[in-house]
Structure formats: C-alpha cells, structure tokens
Length: 73
Image (cartoon, rainbow, N blue to C red; front, side, top):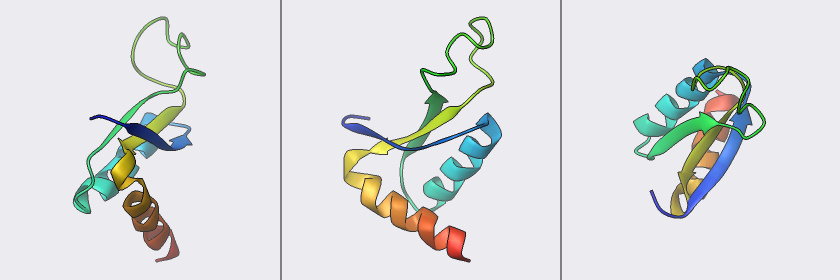
C-alpha cells in the first residue's frame, strides 16, 4: 500500500477490525496498526492499545463516505 492515510484512530483492536471489515466489504483496502501512542504499552507485543485505521490516499474520500453512511443507518 503506497501513499497511506490514517483515516481515524480508535481505542481497541476489536473496533479497528470492525471498521476495516466495513471498508473491505465496500471494496476498500484497509489495515489497522498500533498508534505511536500505544507503542510499548504491552512490552513489545503487537496487541492492545489505540489503533489507527489506514487506507490508500486515493481511497480516503470513499472510505470516509462509507463510514459516515454506516454511522447514519
């Protein structure tokens, strides 16, 4: 994934995966990763803490629209 954009940050990995699932169902490639704020919170294990939802820059507008429509319904 080139030209990555942080779409939003959430508090848990579970919430991040739910959002990525919605985006993937809409055909938008997505990944979630630890924020720099949460780095080190779990002694180097890649779990827990705040997560960033990341998409391609070219998909950011469609991703925001998709999530906004989902939140309205």
